[in-house]
Image (cartoon, rainbow over all chains, first blue to last red; front, side, top):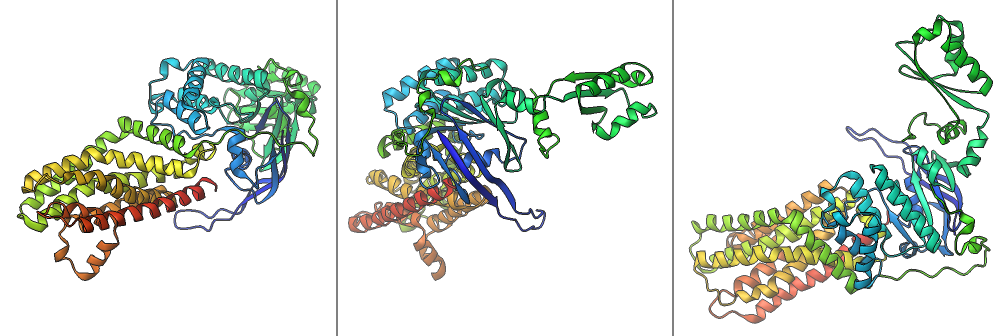
Length: 324
Length: 273
């Protein structure tokens, strides 16, 4: 339903001024090719600055790409960006346009601006606020709500006036588990009842693994992998992640530990190693017995997550994906 | 967490997408008038949260200026100019200055994305916001005009002209404010331009024109608020020349149309970056 071909956008280099360092030319999306199928929850996963938001802005008609094509449900969005607003609902990261409105008016006005008749907009507003458990907050201005509640109110506004495609840029940021469940419940209902498709931007690995049907991993503007979360994890199935936390410093006088140092990613007292299962077993045996054990504070052994996939595929950022 | 497999969804047979497929039907477009009313209503409701203190500031500022000028000016044409200038200053403060700040911030923070991803005509967003800000000026302008007329002993007979002055001067100044806010590359610059516009309306509108040097008087003629001030000031006379009043109001209306059109163009330009 959504086909992206050769999408490229380059931000020009900025000359340095006093107090502002120069930035080189940045290729925010680099020859991106994607196919999103009808009815699926498709994810864009990547650390901050990977180009997720730039890509989404080009898909929603908010930004013109330098080259490439975007086709959604048979419409050419590059040539007719204004059509995007009649096909999709977009939840951006900013809520400034709605901040001073009450939850109820934000949802109703958005529905009206999505072309609904007044009575219909009010009815859909009530239904959506009820569905998301926002009815008790309906009369409060968004500004006065907590971050997660405000996000949920913006999500409610995005749902008023049905659209076949929902584009959600980090929808659950700051939400408690109850609100998250409300969001994914509402998404699933729209999928089951109207075959809605969802494009989700996230840097949350756990969320990506549990919610997404397929995921494209983005790194520095390029799609470095695209598959189901399980399919991606199978690519690194041969690896196990071992996290070692030392009490103070690593006992480098133990030869086995010293030998591991080259392969570990160090973050303070924590060492992270990606090893074959046999090696991992040997390492755990070494550190839990003998001289190294005295220096060990904690250790974990884990099967690969999407974060490991990202790193194994050559993702440049060593940090930046969230596991929560 | 999803419990519905993609294959079991209604319409998933369409998932096989051939190249010669029909384009899907588009959702409805929001029509100009209902969208404008929706934006206007939403903007007006913001007043309860954020704007009321600023309206007091606008009114107190104008009332303060009139009290100050009471010691300098003692009636006649100058008093008429002071009262009319102070009343229109409220419009300049809210419609020009505050609207420029609002659109500047909305643009700077990415808030325009919300409107840009809705099928709403750009004119509805600009006119709805401009209309709401012009409406915010009504109480302050009326209070200032009545207070000033009483203070300087001017007749209240023709104050009804405010019914025409507020919307027309409001359209001209709000259009200018919206255009400045949407064209300024940074929000701080939008704030600065709005403040400068208001200061110009203050100095060139309230101070009597006869004592100004030629160059300043020329600048005064370029400022749209001047025509609102002139139209209003003329009606204080014993026999107002209604042709001139209409002429001044027509200038306001003309500037309003042009500046709102520019603001609409600026909105389109700002929405797709």
